[in-house]
Image 1 (cartoon, rainbow, N blue to C red):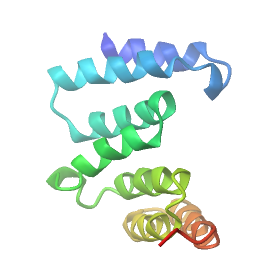
Image 2 (image 1 turned 180 degrees about the vertical axis):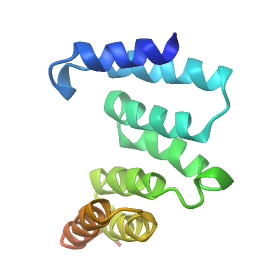
Image 3 (image 1 turned 135 degrees about the vertical axis):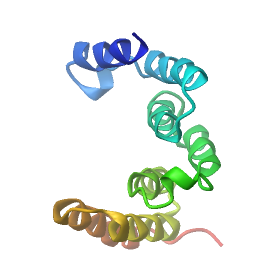
Image 4 (image 1 turned 180 degrees about the horizontal axis):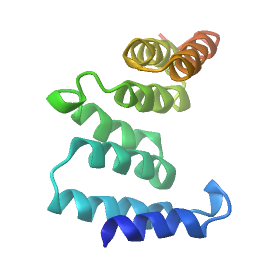
Length: 128
């Protein structure tokens, strides 16, 4: 039922900006309370990023770093890289995208993640 509600939220929005991200984040939180899954938490982090911003989401993602089920899951460093990039932490973002590209199992995803790493490497210098 909760998963259907999440899908319905996505389906009813014409664009990402029209998506009810706070509702989706809450639905993922509720689902996570019923089914302990680090992948559900990673999905919740994405929704939290869209509703509350990258700082709140990064805290969730960093809390998942030690999860054995996500050890070789390319989407964890990919999401982390995206959040770091949004925060202007370009060197860290580049490293996360590079790691994600080594974990990706298909060529298109590897290429996309390598491109994101290159783009992050071209970002403004981070403050010292």
